[in-house]
Amino acid sequence: MDMGKELSHIDKAGNPTMVAVSEKKATSRMAKARATVYLPDPVMEGLRTSGGREEITTKKGPVFHTAIIAGVMAAKNTGHLIPFCHPLGLDDCHIDISVSENNAIITCTCRLQAKTGVEMEALTGATVAALTVYDMCKALSHDISISEVVLLEKTGGKSDYKRV
Image (tube, rainbow, N blue to C red; front, side):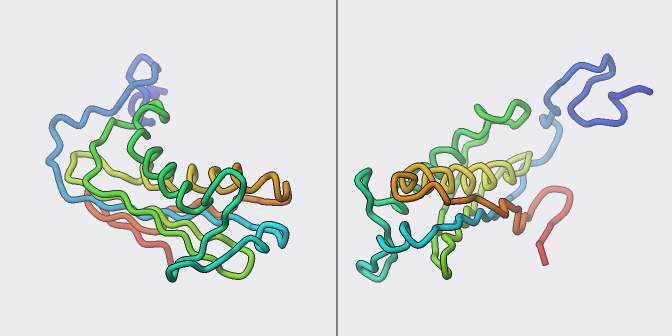
């Protein structure tokens, strides 16, 4: 079996490789991903609304604000973290965090004009924001869990996708 014909990131000799995108046309692309963080009652007790935004503040500082910054930084650096991701200059990265019952719902939306998709950037941004929430709240409880890291939507490139 010629693995190079079966797998996009394996060359004809069976070695890992990046996919060449130089011949592709740059298009407008968007991806949206979500991560869910379960926050047990000891963490939720610190939830306050200030200026119309919900926030948890721990000894480490404002949890959601810090998670947003970490998520954006991670999305911008995805090409350095995931071996075959092309380094992309994002045109926009927006992270939204909302609270529903005992869950922090983190949504990361990334946009750019490029020759390759931005799904991994959105997934990385949502995941690192979720990990930051965990890190900043773990002194209050270790019963925090991260679940449902999913791609919600992508546009541009060969095909569009929307999770139903």
